Structure formats: C-alpha cells, structure tokens
Amino acid sequence: QRVLELLGARFNPSIIYEATNYYWEYVLDSMALYPGVKETLELIKKNNVKVAIITDADADIQNRKLIKLGINKYIDYLVTAQEAGADKPNVKQVELALEKMNLKKDEVIVIGNNPKTDIAVAKNSHMHSILFDFDHLYEDKKDDFEQHISDFKELEVLLGLERRKYVESSLVVFD
Image (tube, rainbow, N blue to C red):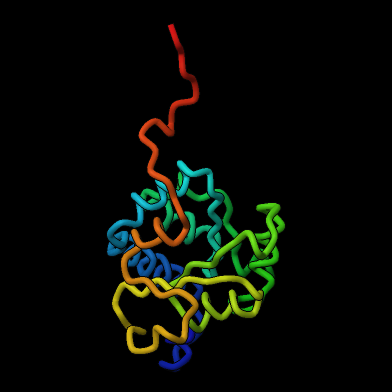
C-alpha cells in the first residue's frame, strides 16, 4: 500500500493483495533453515522442553514458515503480536507465552537473532536470553549479551540437553 502511495497511485486492494502474496511466496520459497536447528529442536523435544515462538508476524505467515521449514512439529506454542496486542520488545507477547506454557520467567530462556527485539524483550521481561548470531553481525559486541552463539547446536550445551539413545521408547519389556 505504501509503495502505491509513494508512487501517487490510487488505492487498489487487488494490487496490494497480489503483491503481498507474491512477496510471501518468494520469501517462503527462498527460506532455508540454519544448520543444526532441526537436530537441536529434535533434541529439545526429546528432553521434554517446551518451545514457544513469539513473533511480530501474523499467525498465518508464521505457520506457513514453520511448515515450509519442516519444524512445526517441534513447536508447542505460538504467540503473535496481533494476539498479544503489541510488537516486541513490548512484554505482552512474553507474558502471554508464559501464561500459555504455564511457566514462570525464571523457567524460560529467550533465544533470538535480533538484539533490538528478541534480546530487548527478554531484558524488558527480566528473563535470561541467548543471541543467535549466525552471520556474526554482533561479534564485536558479544560482551553486551548474556549469551552469544553463532552455531545453533551450541544450545545443546547451554541448555544442558542430554543425548539419550532410547529416549523415544515408552515401554521396556523384560522377558
């Protein structure tokens, strides 16, 4: 809509709708999961740790992203800015996620890739945080963060996750 306004064009919902769909189709087709994310999420789930996504994107887009990336089965909760009534770094999304998960602040750690939103919402909520900096954008400022990682698999150690050989077994039979 803003592009049309800047071009002096008349408001046209059909063009805006088509452009928005084209944009999101391109984004979804171009997305790729960071190395180690799927394996780490699998390990997180095997350790019975709850996972929530807090996002400023709307639910439809976020769900499409999770499905496209093949990680939707590892996510227990989704909280959107629309649902909470505020974008990050406002604490409303965190408060709603805690309520949904039935957890307290000291039982949760925020992991995000944006210091201005993800890490700020953790600070504003008085919660622990880990900055995931895959592209090493904040390498020179890593001392500014509580935790700073560039490899998602580093979460295994930071979260104290255990690799158990038979973790998916729910029944053991002795004969």
